Amino acid sequence: MVGKIDLGSISYVLGILSIVFAFFNPFAGLVLGIIGLMQSNKLKIKKAKKLNIIGIVLSAIFCILQVVLQILTLTGGSGLFPSA
Image 1 (cartoon, rainbow, N blue to C red):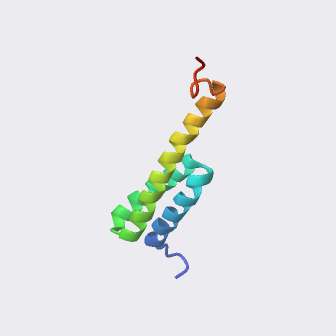
Image 2: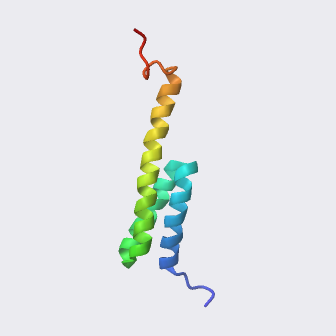
């Protein structure tokens, strides 16, 4: 029993990790979510698939938000409130 790997559990854990990493490092959450989604599609595990999709969506939202905030920081916020 010691060498056996349960890929269903790995896909489930990757889904949970993708949600957690979405808040701290969205790019890592996106990668983990995609890997977990591929594994859950291969094994036909619906619960893990849902977790991975949630992680991918959250990571994508936070990636976009991070890019927008970075652009606003670099431009000094002048793009947000143009002066009259």
